[in-house]
Image (cartoon, rainbow over all chains, first blue to last red; front, top):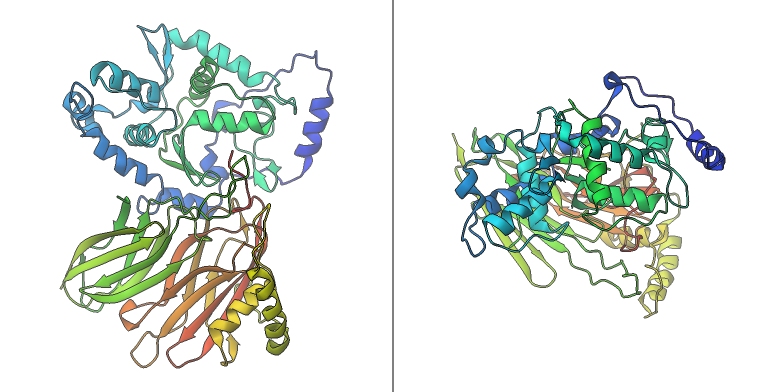
Length: 265
Length: 106
Length: 162
């Protein structure tokens, strides 16, 4: 894969784009399916090596914890995930690859963390796990890694209105920097920002061990970071906007392979 | 209880130099960070790591706040005889933990 | 990429005198708004304490650190010291130091002939673009050093909690 030449035009580009008349409808150019690249491809060899080996991938610490939690009986029902779902390697294979999934009872998509909490509250009669809680992330990572190497599936027509909503959010300018996600991640991926190549922004490695956080975190946490990065006020955890974005991003990455737990800079 | 992933070969030939890896779950709070209201966050790190092979020390490290969170160490040992490789680590606030692995040497 | 180290040019005597004053200043209690930063002089003082009266020689050490790191919070670092690791001749200690984090020490590793190889890998925090220096002590009492320059775009240690 050839890298685009490294030039510091992005800052200039951001200034130029921000200065453009605010009323112009900015049409983002979608990345052609064949040109999509996992953020893994943008990383340095050392960071890739960190992800590649299970013995040195820090995300595996959460997989280890998740495996233990899978078999732990909790809640008033004294029930473990394993009691209903058995061996995760069998029952959870491919699950993370098709989430967020449409939930009939709620009439909207639900992400993996939300699905885990539904099981917690309804089936285990245990309190829901807080967003970014260690246990919630451990379970999401453990379940996520059962789909490692599998392609992302997004072909449920019931998700279409949410994908469209997510696409609109992805293309809308926001924050004091007045930038849309698409301006960096569709139009300028591969170019350098502060010495680091900008990725296309696919969610195929989540939850990820992010070197910046020095811990593992969810896609929502990463989206919040981006919003803070363009100096926009982030939505609260669990906001429908995040669900719409997650659903859109998984559709945008359809066919790409799951890498959970990913390591990212 | 600190969580750790240790990687020790289960079998080795006598005299062979084996590779050992350990990845320990720990924040490694440096003591140099501040909250948004200006309070310093107390240091909380793993400061000592010792590996022994059937009781003999094969590797020891003193870690400082400049070590990354979730410390990772990869080192070596000579496979001398079958037995137990023991990993111990100590840290601030009375942290003490250990994990062992068995090795068969032919 | 140049991996073998360069020795510092300052004379030991001048640095020891200067470092003494710097250490005294650092020991006084102060209210700090931000974390204090080490300096190349502090790193040199730490090295001098390790080495004592022995002469510090260049060589024997290979430091494997990416020349440009993506994130200073987790910098992979592999150090190898050329040593047969026999009872007669082995590497006793390897010290990794830096010059711009709040403190000069990073990790000190202690070995013996049972260690097999004088090499280890780990992940370190680097707050800024700086030199990383490694000092190795051999069983015959000799000291060796090497250093590399690492460019860090997003640094560790000095960021606020959100």
